[in-house]
Amino acid sequence: MRPEDHWDKAQRLENTRLGKFDPDDDCELLIWSCIHGGAQLLNVILHRASVTEENFDMIHTSVPELGRPMPDTLKPVFEALARIESLGPRFVRGAEKWNSEIASRCLADYATVKTAAAASLEGRPAAKHAS
Amino acid sequence: MKIEDHIIKCERIERSAGKLNRDADYEMFVEASMLAGTHLLNAVLHHSGITQERNDLLHSDKPLLDKPVKPEIAEMMRRLKQIEDLRSGYLRGKTAWQATHGDLCVDNMESIRTTAHELLR
Image 1 (cartoon, one colour):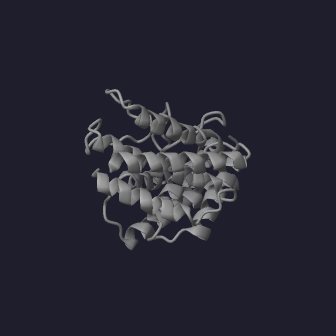
Image 2: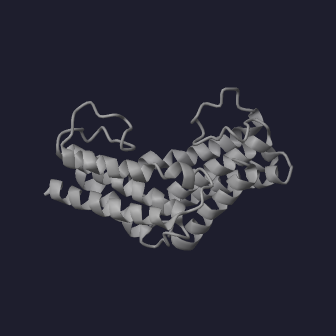
Image 3: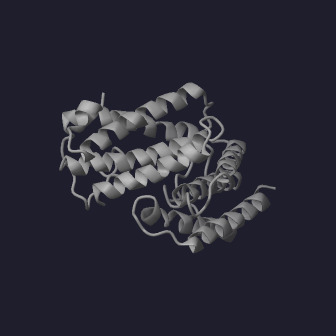
Protein backbone atom coordinates (compact mmCIF):
# COMPACT_ATOMS: atom_id res chain seq x y z
CA MET A 1 0.00 0.00 0.00
CA ARG A 2 1.24 3.54 -0.65
CA PRO A 3 2.74 5.50 2.26
CA GLU A 4 -0.05 8.06 2.03
CA ASP A 5 -2.65 5.32 2.33
CA HIS A 6 -0.92 3.85 5.38
CA TRP A 7 -0.86 7.31 6.93
CA ASP A 8 -4.56 7.83 6.25
CA LYS A 9 -5.43 4.46 7.78
CA ALA A 10 -3.40 5.28 10.89
CA GLN A 11 -5.20 8.60 11.14
CA ARG A 12 -8.58 6.89 10.93
CA LEU A 13 -7.62 4.54 13.75
CA GLU A 14 -6.31 7.46 15.80
CA ASN A 15 -9.45 9.49 15.20
CA THR A 16 -11.56 6.61 16.49
CA ARG A 17 -9.32 6.24 19.52
CA LEU A 18 -9.35 9.93 20.38
CA GLY A 19 -13.05 10.34 19.76
CA LYS A 20 -14.42 7.20 21.37
CA PHE A 21 -12.03 5.61 23.86
CA ASP A 22 -11.23 6.37 27.47
CA PRO A 23 -7.64 5.33 28.26
CA ASP A 24 -8.73 3.29 31.27
CA ASP A 25 -12.30 2.15 30.55
CA ASP A 26 -11.43 1.14 26.99
CA CYS A 27 -7.82 0.11 27.50
CA GLU A 28 -8.11 -3.02 25.34
CA LEU A 29 -9.23 -1.16 22.23
CA LEU A 30 -6.88 1.74 22.95
CA ILE A 31 -3.96 -0.69 22.86
CA TRP A 32 -5.32 -2.45 19.79
CA SER A 33 -5.72 0.84 17.96
CA CYS A 34 -2.13 1.79 18.75
CA ILE A 35 -0.80 -1.62 17.68
CA HIS A 36 -2.44 -1.46 14.29
CA GLY A 37 -2.13 2.29 13.78
CA GLY A 38 1.54 1.92 14.68
CA ALA A 39 1.97 -0.85 12.11
CA GLN A 40 0.52 1.44 9.45
CA LEU A 41 2.97 4.17 10.45
CA LEU A 42 5.86 1.69 10.40
CA ASN A 43 4.97 0.90 6.80
CA VAL A 44 5.04 4.62 5.97
CA ILE A 45 8.59 4.78 7.31
CA LEU A 46 9.79 1.57 5.68
CA HIS A 47 8.37 2.43 2.27
CA ARG A 48 9.70 5.97 2.35
CA ALA A 49 13.13 4.73 3.39
CA SER A 50 13.00 2.13 0.58
CA VAL A 51 13.49 -0.64 3.11
CA THR A 52 10.31 -2.28 1.83
CA GLU A 53 8.35 -1.94 -1.37
CA GLU A 54 4.72 -0.86 -1.41
CA ASN A 55 3.70 -4.44 -2.14
CA PHE A 56 5.35 -5.66 1.07
CA ASP A 57 3.56 -4.46 4.18
CA MET A 58 4.50 -5.33 7.72
CA ILE A 59 1.67 -6.53 9.96
CA HIS A 60 3.74 -6.27 13.13
CA THR A 61 7.37 -5.39 13.88
CA SER A 62 8.37 -9.00 13.29
CA VAL A 63 5.65 -10.20 10.91
CA PRO A 64 6.48 -10.92 8.16
CA GLU A 65 10.22 -11.18 8.52
CA LEU A 66 11.92 -8.17 7.01
CA GLY A 67 14.33 -10.39 5.10
CA ARG A 68 17.20 -8.00 5.58
CA PRO A 69 18.92 -6.30 8.51
CA MET A 70 16.90 -3.50 10.04
CA PRO A 71 18.65 -0.15 9.55
CA ASP A 72 20.11 1.06 12.85
CA THR A 73 18.45 4.42 12.38
CA LEU A 74 15.03 2.78 12.56
CA LYS A 75 15.68 0.82 15.76
CA PRO A 76 14.03 3.42 18.03
CA VAL A 77 10.84 3.19 15.98
CA PHE A 78 10.84 -0.60 15.98
CA GLU A 79 11.51 -0.65 19.71
CA ALA A 80 8.69 1.80 20.46
CA LEU A 81 6.20 -0.17 18.39
CA ALA A 82 7.40 -3.47 19.86
CA ARG A 83 6.71 -2.11 23.35
CA ILE A 84 3.15 -1.26 22.25
CA GLU A 85 2.73 -4.73 20.71
CA SER A 86 3.90 -6.35 23.94
CA LEU A 87 0.81 -4.95 25.66
CA GLY A 88 -1.54 -7.03 23.50
CA PRO A 89 -0.91 -10.42 25.12
CA ARG A 90 -0.99 -8.87 28.59
CA PHE A 91 -4.06 -6.65 28.48
CA VAL A 92 -6.08 -7.49 25.35
CA ARG A 93 -5.62 -11.24 25.11
CA GLY A 94 -4.70 -11.57 28.78
CA ALA A 95 -6.13 -10.43 32.10
CA GLU A 96 -3.23 -8.51 33.63
CA LYS A 97 -4.27 -5.61 35.84
CA TRP A 98 -4.24 -2.25 34.04
CA ASN A 99 -3.04 1.09 35.30
CA SER A 100 -2.97 4.56 33.82
CA GLU A 101 0.82 4.70 33.61
CA ILE A 102 0.71 1.96 30.99
CA ALA A 103 -1.63 4.06 28.87
CA SER A 104 0.68 7.05 29.13
CA ARG A 105 3.68 4.99 28.05
CA CYS A 106 1.72 3.41 25.20
CA LEU A 107 0.65 6.79 23.88
CA ALA A 108 4.18 8.18 24.24
CA ASP A 109 5.52 5.28 22.21
CA TYR A 110 2.81 5.83 19.62
CA ALA A 111 3.80 9.50 19.40
CA THR A 112 7.41 8.44 18.76
CA VAL A 113 6.34 6.26 15.85
CA LYS A 114 3.96 8.87 14.48
CA THR A 115 6.54 11.66 14.64
CA ALA A 116 8.99 9.52 12.70
CA ALA A 117 6.35 8.64 10.12
CA ALA A 118 5.36 12.28 9.68
CA ALA A 119 8.98 13.21 9.19
CA SER A 120 9.51 10.52 6.59
CA LEU A 121 6.43 11.64 4.68
CA GLU A 122 7.86 15.14 4.62
CA GLY A 123 11.13 13.77 3.29
CA ARG A 124 13.12 14.17 6.47
CA PRO A 125 15.14 11.30 8.00
CA ALA A 126 12.81 9.41 10.33
CA ALA A 127 15.49 8.63 12.89
CA LYS A 128 16.05 12.25 13.83
CA HIS A 129 12.54 12.33 15.22
CA ALA A 130 12.45 8.87 16.69
CA SER A 131 14.20 9.43 20.00
CA MET B 1 -6.66 -17.73 30.57
CA LYS B 2 -9.49 -18.64 32.92
CA ILE B 3 -12.98 -18.97 31.49
CA GLU B 4 -14.36 -16.19 33.69
CA ASP B 5 -11.53 -13.87 32.61
CA HIS B 6 -12.33 -14.49 28.93
CA ILE B 7 -15.95 -13.60 29.61
CA ILE B 8 -15.01 -10.43 31.49
CA LYS B 9 -12.66 -9.40 28.67
CA CYS B 10 -15.34 -10.05 26.09
CA GLU B 11 -17.82 -7.94 28.02
CA ARG B 12 -15.33 -5.09 28.41
CA ILE B 13 -14.46 -5.10 24.70
CA GLU B 14 -18.11 -5.25 23.67
CA ARG B 15 -18.91 -2.37 26.02
CA SER B 16 -16.13 -0.32 24.42
CA ALA B 17 -17.34 -1.33 20.96
CA GLY B 18 -20.74 0.05 21.92
CA LYS B 19 -19.18 3.52 21.74
CA LEU B 20 -18.28 3.03 18.09
CA ASN B 21 -20.20 4.04 15.01
CA ARG B 22 -19.90 0.87 12.98
CA ASP B 23 -19.69 2.75 9.67
CA ALA B 24 -17.47 5.67 10.73
CA ASP B 25 -15.23 3.47 12.91
CA TYR B 26 -15.42 0.29 10.87
CA GLU B 27 -11.80 -0.76 11.42
CA MET B 28 -12.15 -0.90 15.18
CA PHE B 29 -15.68 -2.27 14.93
CA VAL B 30 -14.39 -5.29 13.03
CA GLU B 31 -11.42 -5.65 15.38
CA ALA B 32 -13.58 -5.44 18.49
CA SER B 33 -15.88 -8.13 17.08
CA MET B 34 -12.90 -10.35 16.33
CA LEU B 35 -11.39 -9.88 19.80
CA ALA B 36 -14.65 -10.36 21.70
CA GLY B 37 -15.55 -13.41 19.63
CA THR B 38 -12.14 -14.95 20.19
CA HIS B 39 -12.52 -14.59 23.96
CA LEU B 40 -15.90 -16.35 23.84
CA LEU B 41 -14.48 -19.11 21.65
CA ASN B 42 -11.63 -19.65 24.11
CA ALA B 43 -14.10 -19.78 27.01
CA VAL B 44 -16.11 -22.47 25.24
CA LEU B 45 -13.04 -24.45 24.19
CA HIS B 46 -11.74 -24.47 27.76
CA HIS B 47 -15.17 -25.37 29.16
CA SER B 48 -15.55 -28.28 26.75
CA GLY B 49 -12.04 -29.59 27.45
CA ILE B 50 -10.82 -29.05 23.90
CA THR B 51 -8.13 -26.65 25.09
CA GLN B 52 -6.64 -25.92 28.47
CA GLU B 53 -6.66 -22.51 30.10
CA ARG B 54 -2.96 -22.06 29.39
CA ASN B 55 -3.52 -22.60 25.66
CA ASP B 56 -5.58 -19.80 24.14
CA LEU B 57 -6.37 -19.48 20.47
CA LEU B 58 -5.41 -16.13 18.94
CA HIS B 59 -7.75 -16.64 16.01
CA SER B 60 -10.26 -19.24 14.92
CA ASP B 61 -7.51 -21.22 13.20
CA LYS B 62 -4.40 -20.15 15.07
CA PRO B 63 -3.14 -22.42 16.42
CA LEU B 64 -5.02 -25.24 14.75
CA LEU B 65 -6.89 -27.53 17.13
CA ASP B 66 -5.70 -31.11 17.41
CA LYS B 67 -9.11 -32.45 18.49
CA PRO B 68 -12.50 -32.53 16.78
CA VAL B 69 -15.12 -30.11 18.06
CA LYS B 70 -18.89 -30.44 18.27
CA PRO B 71 -20.94 -28.83 15.49
CA GLU B 72 -21.99 -25.86 17.63
CA ILE B 73 -18.36 -24.95 18.26
CA ALA B 74 -17.46 -25.52 14.63
CA GLU B 75 -20.19 -23.04 13.73
CA MET B 76 -18.79 -20.51 16.21
CA MET B 77 -15.39 -20.89 14.56
CA ARG B 78 -16.86 -20.52 11.08
CA ARG B 79 -18.63 -17.31 12.03
CA LEU B 80 -15.53 -15.93 13.75
CA LYS B 81 -13.48 -16.73 10.66
CA GLN B 82 -15.89 -14.69 8.55
CA ILE B 83 -15.20 -11.70 10.78
CA GLU B 84 -11.44 -12.33 10.71
CA ASP B 85 -11.50 -12.46 6.92
CA LEU B 86 -12.69 -8.84 6.83
CA ARG B 87 -9.48 -7.60 8.44
CA SER B 88 -7.15 -7.76 5.46
CA GLY B 89 -9.30 -5.40 3.42
CA TYR B 90 -10.58 -3.06 6.09
CA LEU B 91 -7.82 -2.90 8.71
CA ARG B 92 -4.74 -3.49 6.62
CA GLY B 93 -5.99 -2.49 3.18
CA LYS B 94 -8.08 0.26 1.74
CA THR B 95 -11.19 -1.61 0.73
CA ALA B 96 -14.22 0.68 0.75
CA TRP B 97 -16.47 -0.20 3.68
CA GLN B 98 -19.69 -2.01 2.94
CA ALA B 99 -22.39 -1.63 5.57
CA THR B 100 -23.47 -5.22 4.93
CA HIS B 101 -20.21 -6.30 6.54
CA GLY B 102 -21.23 -4.40 9.65
CA ASP B 103 -24.43 -6.46 9.62
CA LEU B 104 -22.34 -9.60 9.26
CA CYS B 105 -20.29 -8.70 12.34
CA VAL B 106 -23.42 -7.97 14.38
CA ASP B 107 -25.21 -11.13 13.25
CA ASN B 108 -22.21 -13.38 13.74
CA MET B 109 -21.42 -11.96 17.16
CA GLU B 110 -25.04 -12.47 18.21
CA SER B 111 -24.80 -16.09 17.12
CA ILE B 112 -21.41 -16.61 18.80
CA ARG B 113 -22.68 -15.00 22.00
CA THR B 114 -25.85 -17.09 22.07
CA THR B 115 -24.02 -20.35 21.47
CA ALA B 116 -21.38 -19.50 24.05
CA HIS B 117 -23.99 -18.76 26.68
CA GLU B 118 -25.76 -22.06 25.93
CA LEU B 119 -22.57 -24.11 26.05
CA LEU B 120 -21.26 -22.41 29.18
CA ARG B 121 -24.45 -23.00 31.18
